[in-house]
Length: 163
Image 1 (tube, one colour):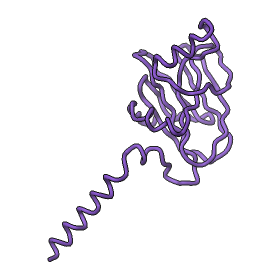
Image 2 (image 1 turned 90 degrees about the horizontal axis):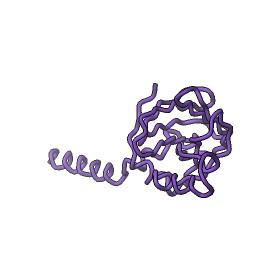
Image 3 (image 1 turned 45 degrees about the horizontal axis):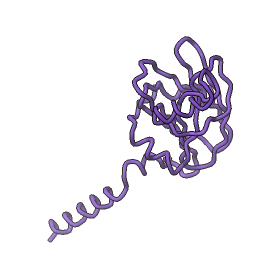
């Protein structure tokens, strides 16, 4: 009788675990009062890496097709990417509790004929809206991804470890 109860408990736990997909778990913060920032770099085969900081603290080094996430209190924060050759891009964000998604992608404002930046972003699988910021060199920017599209974008990428 104990064996049947144990099997039933194990089966119930397995069903519960299957009901929560890994994407749901990743998009939820460990504390529901915190903001979980997912920072992604979807792209086609760039050989470079990108150091990413939140509020001046490094949270990870991204390669193309990777992401990192970090929990922060709701409110204003500064996202910074540090690229090859020492250039940076800073963006101020204001977030509430829950998941927020940001992509690194090509700017639509610099180095492209009118409209080509958007085409380049689509070709690289980047779908976000550019977050206003300041750059030491034009090219890559932070793009905010809609919450309903973020989990699908995240599913195509690999996580990276924290430094």
